[in-house]
Amino acid sequence: MDETKGVTVTDIQMPFGSMVIFMIKWAIASIPAAIILFLIASVFAVVFGGIFSGMTGLMQ
Image (cartoon, rainbow, N blue to C red):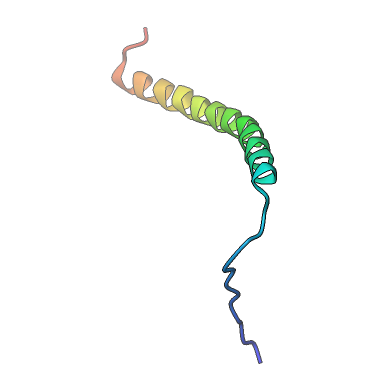
């Protein structure tokens, strides 16, 4: 019997200070992810910029 049952969380007991620390750690941990996404977007921009400028003959 492959029956899945869902779980509903109704309340989390967490002190305010711990929540603030958790959110600060979360924000700091997101910085490397943002840098990686920026680098990936930069590579795509360079590649597609080169392709489209080559197609239009702007670079000589």
